[in-house]
Image (cartoon, rainbow, N blue to C red; front, side, top):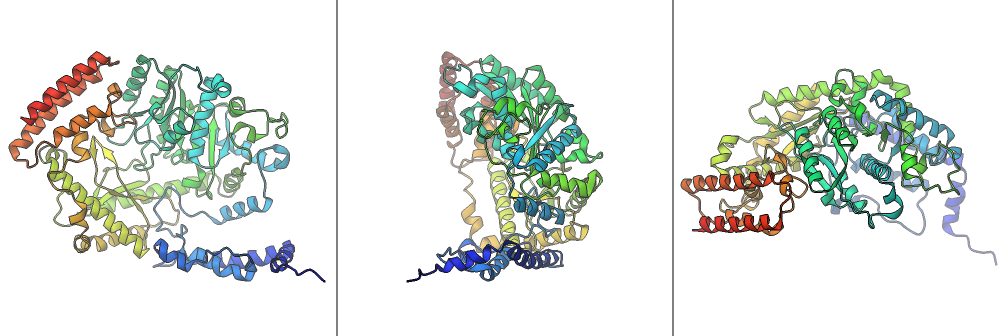
Length: 623
């Protein structure tokens, strides 16, 4: 009896006709994609046809069956994937630090997939390896990193930061590479801005350094790391017999788009023989603009530098370069000499990483650079800055809006919409109206979240909101609009302001109807985290480390922090006289804590004395 043929065998046989199948699929997908891009540029086009998860599950065919659907059954699914996904080709997508790509980006991505290449060893990807080496060296030269400089690609900026820290550790302390931390006897410390990317903490966790090995350096009123605080933190670490080894500066922070003063920070790092790393994932691409590259002045001092073309340059995700002043440092620090794979070839790029298989992402920037040239990238960057300036002026000239920073550091425009009847609190008001400011802050945060929710549901614009601490104060949630897409024009930004205004005019009524104001605000008598941070002097924006405790005494235990919080919970109803008393008591506590900052090592005796003084102060307040 003839064996029964499996139903899927027919599909498999069809797929074996690769050339025919490829022609059919590419032809159908081409029509879908061209229509998709055309629709995204039409007036009134939605950025997203938003559906909540439970509803979306019913609209997308998520079933994975025993028998396949074949090519003909695939196209409806692909159509729905496009329909319900966020359309990053739409210029009104301003949510993240990337935008839609471009036609040449699509072609290079297809080429990578078509070749199905692996750029870990030269002999299986010779052309792509040479392209990666060449474009890495060109980027490093533009940064001024020297004649020996070069780099490699990594799967994203976070991974690039991780590999930079690993490389620094293995280079500076090679014994850890083989023996680990057993009997190492040193506490390795990393320094980064309190506004830096969380990947530094993730890396400390992954490498066994521990999150507590990170010192968060305070930033100034523009969100830039303070070099004086960095040096102070390094000296304190040395005084504690720790081993500082790594400084991370940021060229373009995630929220505000701030640029740390790289030259000053780099000089401090060199002074103390620390590895100087720059996370330029967002702002590193400014090397292509003579007008704006002053923001990354000092990049030439970096030992390693991250640059993500998939952000500001429009290269398809993902494309991240980790560049080094010595292009051989990755192999020297990280190689294990796996002879079955790496055959003593200096072009075997995979030997310098912690992985094996590598996607040849460098071709995406290489081909893009060929097409657009430095001039094309320069025009893209300067158009983005021009649009950022235009939106900033629109917001400044509208009474219902307020900027977070009067002059944005770069391409993130951060602002509030202030409904009628809500005043704007300033520093002096905050000093005498602690609880009233807190309630106002939370109410404005609800306004921001409410407007964002409606914006998302309408789908005409997509941008995010963010929390942040500035000048020792936790700010109300604010909108963050990213200028990046080259297709953004003034008309789109006029529409954006009008859209927010239209929603904002009825937002208080909307929130009240949904009981969000009543349920979302805490009573005036409830102590808030901000009140605690203000009185303890431990806010991230004015001198804190990763634990939220001032750098000079971050060994104080949680029990002491709890005691300080209790001070704030004593009064349940506060009169004006109580406020004055609270401020005076706050100042006394602040003086005590400032005195502690001058002490480099807190002995047990010192701590016990402090606890007794604190307990006495708490009793006086209670009385």
